[in-house]
Length: 302
Figure 1 (cartoon, rainbow, N blue to C red):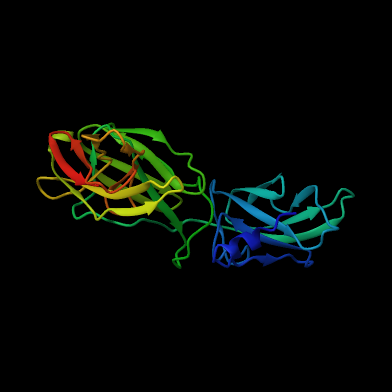
Figure 2 (cartoon, rainbow, N blue to C red):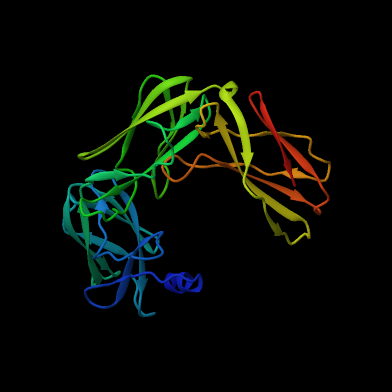
């Protein structure tokens, strides 16, 4: 039996779980921090995948099998102490936990809804985002009902692109996203799910199109070793002022005692085009690092 609710409360968040029909178990979608209730949340139809966390409320209870009243609505599979869901057509299905003697332990109702729109955050000023040619970039959308409530699960959204788009990966766990590369020039990336459709106009530029590199204020944190981690967001812009997704620095000029960490690029649909860079330094002794992208460069004071 897992005590997942305690772990969530200890982190400062309280999530809403659903009490089973017989009061012997609690059910909640995971990963989730707030409204994880089975009764108020729905899974995206047409291939949405989700996991239900099962917490038995009595130590004497156990379950070893599942019955499913409507497999067309969802396919269910026991996965350790969890239930894996693959959504089918919109509707409801009752999932029942059974013990080793085929007796009912508890049950809950799962709802599957169609996606009415695909939501994402627009963080660019033009018709679409600007990306660095041939760089791996990620685009994330959220499946949403007509009333604005988000749907649970990932996998229902299908991503396609025009000839200039190369799809790298789509099977991200817990989110509907695609990693892609685009050759230089205009391109279109499309996300489809039920009646919802998004066509993203991509402007892919060569590294030589970047003319400006800026740094946000560095953030310092002390490590167990006594050294400091310096984290800074880097923005690369074209001559027209468009920030470029996927633009990563080539760092040089580092002192022997300074170590550059793996950069983390921002995601289209989640926030502005920035790349988070970090360094380990033994102390703040005036060290610098030079960021170069294409022919543009800028010096960061560590």
